[in-house]
Length: 231
Length: 102
Image 1 (cartoon, each protein chain N blue to C red):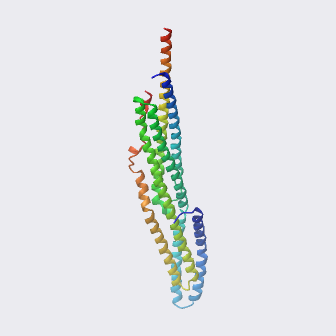
Image 2: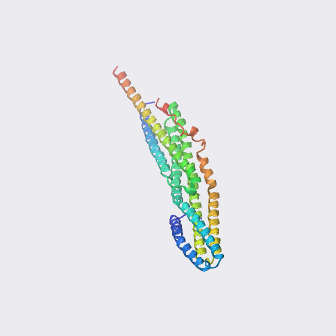
Image 3: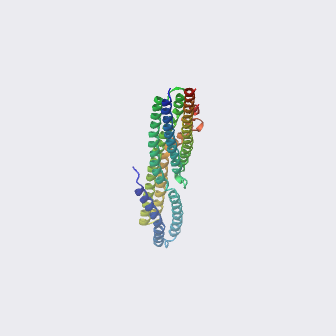
């Protein structure tokens, strides 16, 4: 699955729209089922209890999905960040090559103690810039993959909401409503589980990028020792 | 080494200083881009990845800021070296003139 901002925004817009339609569909179903069964002695009370339970489950479901939708801007941000990091990767990669070339050229122009100090002192900048390029490439890959996982997650949420709306609209009894909401809750839980599984490796990758990176001893950019060049 | 050689070296040093200034600006730019790529909104279900991701942005931004300073320092050191060569050249030229007059 690849990522398209337009396609993703369509998924989110449609999910919001379907969510807004669920309460009136549910109210209509409740009225329909109540009017059909409430007159039956004993069964009427049982149906009322089942409908109350259904309303409670539906409210929980709506709250859960709405909470997921509050972070729905993250995949678009991750997708755009993936492009930004890719640009940094390319730019820093070119820069590392340019610095290396410049240092090699300078060795032909400027020899002796000062020239040697300059070349050895500035050489560690190449490694640091190369590392920024590598970090940026890895971050770009992770950000892009997270965006795609996010799209998959919200597509699954939309499918669960649409299925629930259909189940409610066609339910002929409290059992049908209960089955619909239980299936939707399970589907959303499964989508969240799959999402977490999908992004877990990227979480570890991102954590590993900054923890004790040897290109930045002590967590700092390596110092150039060119002060001797002027002496 | 004649004064002509020193002049060539001085210009090479100034060229290299300009090169490092350019790299410093670009490195600082990467740092700004890393800061700009951070997420400050609600992370929700993405919290487990947004936290480490923002940490990467922050670290890279700091490193690039330090890298910019280092590269500016290299450029500054090269300008200082060029000035020192200039001073040496001027001094040598003065000594030569005095020797000729003497």
